[in-house]
Image 1: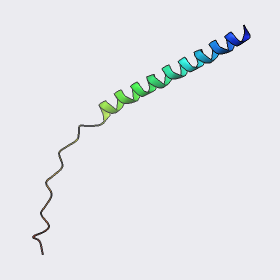
Image 2: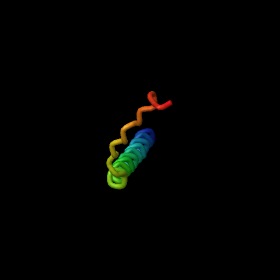
Image 3: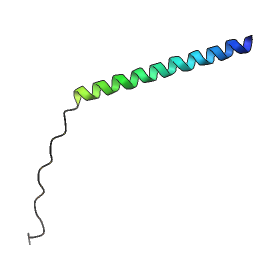
Image 4: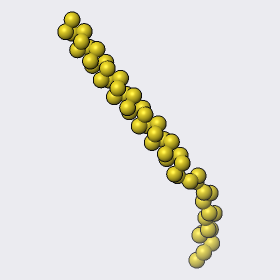
Length: 52
């Protein structure tokens, strides 16, 4: 019976850790989506081959 308690304790610890990790990832993803502006198109490159 002691082995069953140990196994249940390990599962409970793992489940709480994974839920905490997933919640952190979800929160971080939602925060970065709000704070980072969408990418701007880059300006056209100047031609350098003809400049000498």
